[in-house]
Image (cartoon, rainbow, N blue to C red; front, side, top):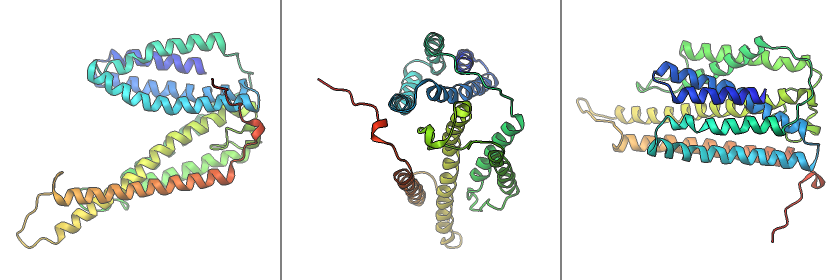
Amino acid sequence: MFIGGITLFTLASLAGGLATQPWWLISCRALQGTGAAFAAPAALSLIAVTFPEGKLRNLALGVYAAMTGIGGAVGLIAGGLLTTYASWRWVFYVNVPLGVLLVLGAIAVIPESPQHARQWDLPGAFLATSGFALLVYGLSNGATGPDGVSHWGDVATIVGLTVASIALVLFVLVEARTSEPLLPLWIFANRNRAGVSDEHSGVASSMFNAGQQVGGAIGLAVIGSFAWTVVNSHITAALGHLKAGQTLLVVPGSAIYDNALSDGITLALRIVCGVTIAALVITIITIRVHKEDLPARPVLG
């Protein structure tokens, strides 16, 4: 699964760099996402089944987390440099040699993990994907629009949130039919406490990655909706105080627009700050790691 996902991602990157039409480029991006969806959970699952419980696995998970964070930061900077000084096509081409090295390294180094009986859960995949997509769609369209009207009551918003809720409920009910929990998102790093066996490590890994991606999408939709609702409400209120026959141009750079945008961004930052503090509190209260399980610190000098 890991090698196949990386191979698909690499080939899609090469095809994307050669794209000459919008539909071609968009299709390659979709294939890239498909390949990444296979490879990302497989990578985390391989750590769980390759490294023994304790210090080695914790060290491997630490390296995995560090590379994920560093890769995201470096990718943004490198992407900007490539598009500025080379071409947008190199954003795709740069993945090709890296993908080839990954595939060759995986074949040479990573042992084959034990095989378990599997069956494709196509209804579950459809429900999960459509449910999350509709949820993000509903939240994104709920904000007050440029016309100053709230769209939380629109049919599209209501239908999106309703169908998403039903799909997510059905998806969560899957847990009741299994012998082990399928949603150990933030506690996956300590697999023994999460109760996830090697057989279910792939499912747990995919849920961990899906939680990160969906959480980011939902978070952005919710925060953006609140922020732009505040911006439009402030602009509408300011325009409501105009005298009859008086006009006012509200554009970026004008005092009304800039003040409204500042208030909206301030609210968004406060929400992010609150969520971050809540995550920190939950982490401190719930996550317990024994000292003997921590990897030994390297001796420098």
